[in-house]
Image 1 (cartoon, rainbow, N blue to C red):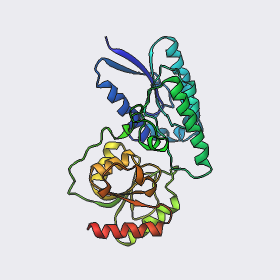
Image 2: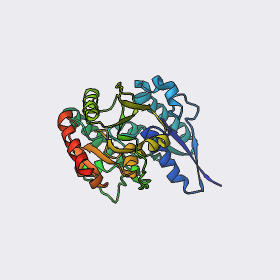
Image 3: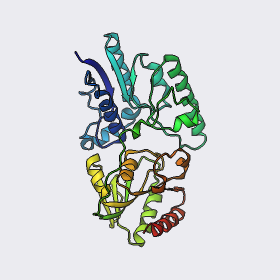
Amino acid sequence: MKKKIYFWASDISNSSGEGILANSFIKNYKKNKSIEFINISNKDIYQKKNNFMNYKNRYDTIYHKYIHPFKGVYRIWTYYFKKENICYINYLPLWNCMLFFLLPTKTLLGPVTGSINRKYPSMLFFSILERLSLLIIKKKNFKITFSHNFYLKKYNLSKKKYKSNFILQDFFYRKRSKIKKFDFIIYYRKNSKLNERYIINLIKQLIKINLKIAVIGNKIKHKNVKNFGYVSRKKSISIISKSNYALSNPENLYSYFVQDCLSNQLTIFYNIFFKKYNILNKKKMIPILFQSYSQDFKIIKNNIKKLK
């Protein structure tokens, strides 16, 4: 008889980072054929699935991002009292100490996420919350895996006790495609740290030197930009494979977009803030500042000349 694990996840789509991470976590456990995962949030209209773009306004709300996860905590407790095996997968940022405090001790936790690229005074505030979470995790004896390696370095955590870089477990290199339609590919989200004015001005400079630009995610209004919108990861990889260079999001070093670009052997321009955390192919990854578009354009232009 298979061991049943009842899980809650706010996002199981195949075109968002959280969803891909959740599915990777489930897939990793399913390698053990004696385990069966059962989705207890499957009928919840706020669970983000592959058709989420049809209801995008539903998922851009405060309720979905900050309140809906606590509904998951309640559902987890109902199965805990039934003495079932329980699992809470996402969203699990380390700063959300209330989630760790409220979840039952025996809960199997999905990969712990979170950004460390913040400015003062918010950096101090979030650091306090993160330390509270670490105390709760230790007290409750939660076995956790971090999606990246940032917190291990930031808080000098034990590599033996805490696993890290779960997000990289499926990374591999693909054969470089000979068919190239685009010079630059950019993943753009309006609610990210990729400032709209910065990216539009940078794109204008890239177009001036006759570079062809492809954008996935939120659309950028420019006649010389090819917008694909939000697409599945499979479609995204197809577009990436036809590109030469990529611009990463400044808030995330190990995003699936960055991994897929590196996997297809693109040269990636990424945030210099993450340079000390980077364990990927540094020859293919070039740091920029993400502060002045004109300064970053010079770095990009000079490196493109060298690489040609």
